[in-house]
Image (tube, rainbow, N blue to C red; front, side, top):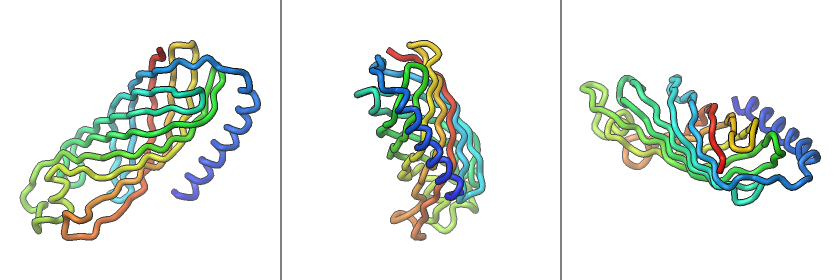
Length: 195
């Protein structure tokens, strides 16, 4: 998976370079974007797939740099029913190039992945175990690294495609295990309006 991600990232950087040659003219970029998305997240450390819906708010500081916040809600059972739903909150920077009709960006957004759980007899043993931590509704550190491709069919509308590696730190000082860090494939497809 890391090799595939490196190849995808290299291809995106190559395309960014090509697009920059065609994007020399000044682009009149709207300052605010508000969007919704569908997300797929593959938890590598657990062999679980998760899907959810969410929203995004982006402030374009310049044509090439933006600050954005992203919220996704995942529902349904996870990891032996220790988590009934999960919430992902990310805030960070998107940078790249755009033309009047398309844009390609790199994103880095730290945040949290909250596991909203329920205590299940037999799973939450011993006390302080990782499963117990999920059941207690903990916030785990998350870092979203990846690429974004956008299409602008008209000035006020954006179609957005995200792909990347969401690194999540599981466990740690509040459990009886040292915890672990997992790189997890995540993709999002969305639509938004631009003001």
